[in-house]
Image (cartoon, rainbow, N blue to C red):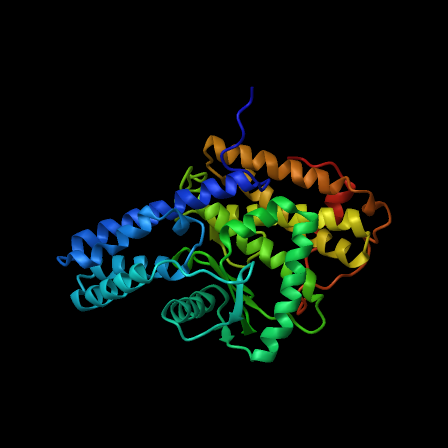
Length: 364
């Protein structure tokens, strides 16, 4: 009898819950340990109530992850004043208990002035400027925009539920909050320091908003899952100083970044393969055409330079299988491979390497 994969490119409810709980309790145990060291006041050990409360592991509150990182940074810097302030805040959060939404699905709002949201916005601007040589604009949106985009995002979640149910199970396991913004450069943001939340930019007017959100939801939730799953197995053994070509970024990246990009693209290809099978829509075909190109580019780079654990090798085999299944879809028999297609998110041309891959056997 073959045991099920611990970590997989094929999403499932069971694996999502295992990865989420492993990652959550690893963080909350670290937080409880830091509190026990930093605090001489027993009331601050209320954080232990979060460890004992099983509901905590099913409702990922991004602020808890932010406070853990802030306390850790303050203690490393021996910043006593900041550490005390964070301890007081942690005690308040633990005393209040876990926030629960009255509505099903993730809470969808504009980005706000809360401590954890502003931290991640500012950090994303710094990283964006470092990576892309252009400082991103990340601005809040109006309440009217929230209402409009929330309707489209809800529709995109239904698209995922109808066509990729395992991914929808993963969404329910990991996604607590969605924050919408307007801006440039950056489109989607997740971070282990605000785990449970994703930031998403409103799409350009000429872009199919529902497909845009369906792809980005799948993309960011897959990052969350893989980050959590790596608490069970490291997957990648390359040193961070080794740089490689990313399938979806212009800048050289460590193999961890390349693997993450390829992993999330493998999930996206699965979603859009299912959509293409059900709709046969030309626009969906163009999305998949470009996504498949990105997946193959990632597979090639991983095969060239990755040092993988056995779990990582299994994931690479799954990436190849997902790409092969997508290449064999019947839609390609009528797809215009000679067409010139703008990038699916607008704003520029795309690579056309997929054209050759669809007409020739893979060498991998």
